[in-house]
Image (cartoon, rainbow, N blue to C red; front, side, top):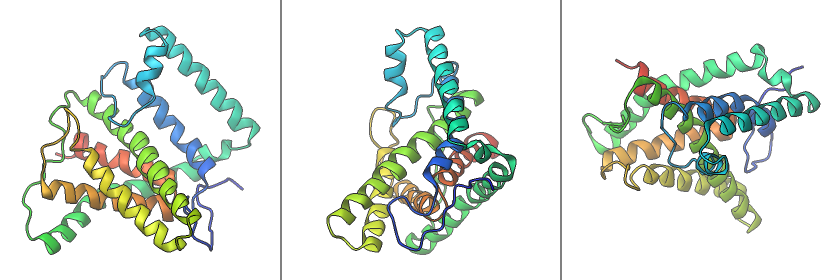
Amino acid sequence: MPRAPIARSPAPRPLGRGDLAASLVLIFPLYLAYAIGILFAPAVNGVDFVSRHVWALCGHDRGRYLALHAVIAGGFLIWVRHARRGRSLGTDVALPLIGEAALYAVSMGALIRLVMDHVLGPVGVLAVEDAHLGATGERVVTSLGAGVHEELVFRLGLMAGSAYVLMRAGTRPRVAIAVALIGSALLFSLAHHVGPFGDPWSRSLFAFRALAGVAFGLIFYYRSLAHAVYAHALYDLWVLVLRP
């Protein structure tokens, strides 16, 4: 049987119900596409703490950078084979996951708007597109980077990490997970307003992204990290590239 990224667990745990190793296998193709894509469409994600250092390590040489990622890809394939994780990339696992993530992506924005209209009143048009993005290729790379790096940082790192620390400190598991979910979602939203390329402050936009962070966190916890990564990447593709 192929190892799906979902592993049912009766007890709450920081990583949720997903199989982390299977998720990382499914995420790697997106990471590699983004890592190569930023060479041709300068769209390094704001929480990508790796690529800039790797680029500097390679002496800002494109050939060395590509060779290093070829080695990384080769190492990944060797690990997948020895760990017997190749079935995670099979169409019987990957396609249903991507289809489910696409459903989340196309429905999430409308559902969040309904919640916001009910709680805050009509909020008008939300300019969630990044005005700094240029050509379609750059927007595609940006979407991949957001899906991979923002979910690794805010869901796997901050949400799961915070939940683990709180549980170790004696907090009840469900309370720890709820606090980590909300806290990571707020930081996720706030990060989009920080720095020279951050969006101007907007209560509505902050609330929208915070609710999106909660949605991605719930997908991460109840489905898997891979579901959250693909949902995020596909949502950004929908908003930045595909939506008329």
